Length: 394
Image (tube, rainbow, N blue to C red; front, side, top):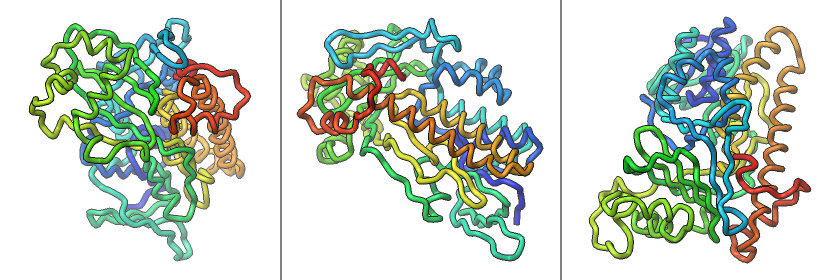
């Protein structure tokens, strides 16, 4: 049996940030990450404000050396027919970044290990139970048969909220938002590192360049508004929807007809495509736990609360919450009884801020008030905040 003071369930950005902070502070901690190796995943934008957190974690120099792509701003077609640009030149923290997520997460976990945390890759938590033997704490059985014993758990399991939900904590969602997405090679001529965002009757799109001369295309809509699975899972359906946009279609028009993003139009209906070209589906719900901490545990990142990708702040909040949760644990260990309550209060204030931004952004788009997607957003956009497009928060 392996014993530690704090066991972090999940090795994504939030879990790694918590582990780095705890280990550097002298707390024995371990991280269980079910994936044996980092892999690409959607969610590639890092807000400029994250620079401060990366510096505090001691990884800013390594981050800069890893080849992530600086992004100077966004262009959105939202609430009207003219594109609106937001430039980060006026942001005191500098530009945003488009990440190689696999490299980014590998770097953070390596930093946790260097700080003294025990990092277990390819080890997924399978069963979590309270220990009632007079000593207390938790016992976690891993899928490979290992047993871990810890006084505290940090739930960094992402939207699954595995620790919290296993112990009866409800997770409430605001919507059914999903991202249907694909990553394709971009031509050498495509050097624009800005993110393009475009509202459409059935949802909205974003289009971003990432390291490795690739482009991410993502269509955000509600799960129940997608057509039959046999349709939306095809590359033909996905690229047909992309061709119906305005801002993104203009960029695509300059791509070669042999590009993966240009080879499935109606005029090339007979083109053969491999199954690897089919789009993927990822949950993008805005949701949060009823409470972000309990007896012997606390939640961080998406496990605590997940934000609409329109905000562009998901990764920033993951890092921020991981660091702040670890600081709250330090204070709790030192005897400050309200430290975890303060962490919960901070989480609640960030959620309220997000709700105001979400309401403002969605209420700015009024061109399709009778379509289900926008009816739902306008119905929940009750914030008195002045309407502003997605560039206000992304």
